[in-house]
Length: 56
Image 1 (cartoon, rainbow, N blue to C red):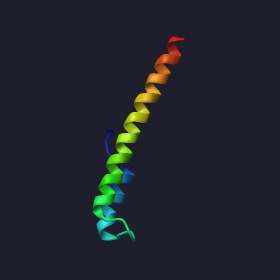
Image 2 (image 1 turned 90 degrees about the vertical axis):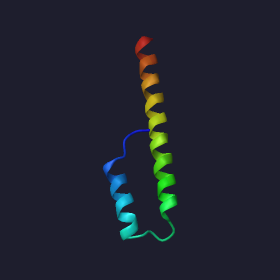
Image 3 (image 1 turned 180 degrees about the horizontal axis):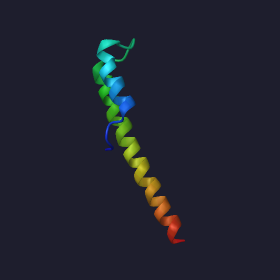
Image 4 (image 1 turned 180 degrees about the vertical axis):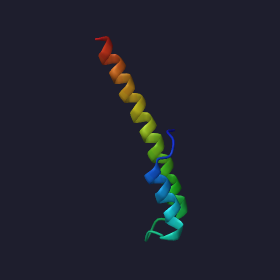
């Protein structure tokens, strides 16, 4: 996974202080994990595509 971003960190810190209507801590954690994993996979695919494109 990639490192946590500043906006995401602020969202996770601000959540308990100013809770959103239907998002509990477990939801925020699961969303954060999914998002970081998705960004990691997207970055790997992007790098692989550019490595392939540079060889052709």
